[in-house]
Amino acid sequence: QFPIALHQNTDMGFPDDTASPGPTIVSTATLEAIAAWFPDCTIDEVRRRFRSNIEIAGVPAFWEDQLCSASGDPVSFQIGDVPLWGINPCQRCVVVTRNSRTGTPDRHFQTTFSSHRQATLPTWAPRSRFNHFFRLAVNTQIPNAAGKTIRVGDPLHFTATATS
Image (cartoon, helix red, strand yellow):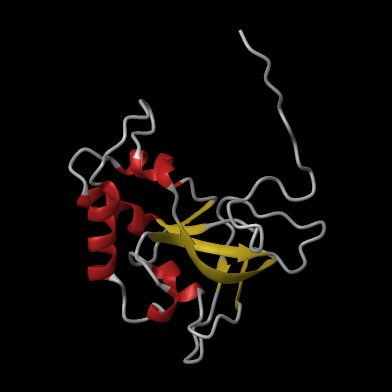
């Protein structure tokens, strides 16, 4: 019984990272690995907590970490005919520490997650981009996608390089 207001931003939406407002990218294997760290979390619970926009199947856990460069330069890749730039590992907020259905906080979630994340950081991950390990998924920018759409099943095109 109090007034509320709904706001819409048709230019950018309300992204967590306003410098990189493109979709967040994570792999299915990453979500499965995280679910294994928490006995009370299913993969669906992990999906709801981390809320990534695009999930990539058929790649190893934490594959998405290579979509960031150690130098901070964008890493180019493409999904379907939409070009994207991987920018940085996504810093997570308090939302992921709470049960997605009840809102009950898990006071050990961040510590447990960060310990496992640090221990399992792949060799291809740009360690310099992890000033802390409460990061998951990759923030992106879309350089030019006017009139283009990403669809379920679109192929991902990415060639890892020694400099990325």
